[in-house]
Image 1 (spheres, rainbow, N blue to C red):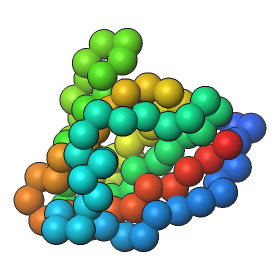
Image 2: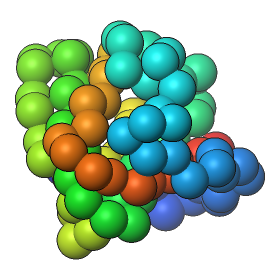
Image 3: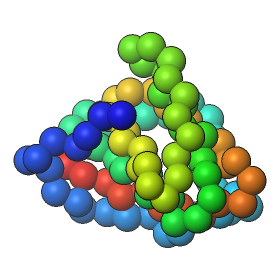
Image 4: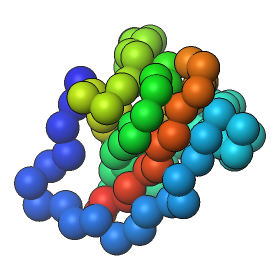
Length: 91
């Protein structure tokens, strides 16, 4: 799993989502803008995080394993049962 660079700062955080409230856009392929990193933070449960570039990688995220979203890289998520999480954005 990638790590956010040392020279970025948090600037925005989503509300807490559950398997029932996760926005549909996060379930489809999407990306962040150039220079914008994301960190998917799991509070409870598990989330399947699929990174589509440069090669497909599927990771099961949990409280001990956050997902790092690289700028412009296509990805999507899928709840694995009951889950609560948020996404924090850095630039």
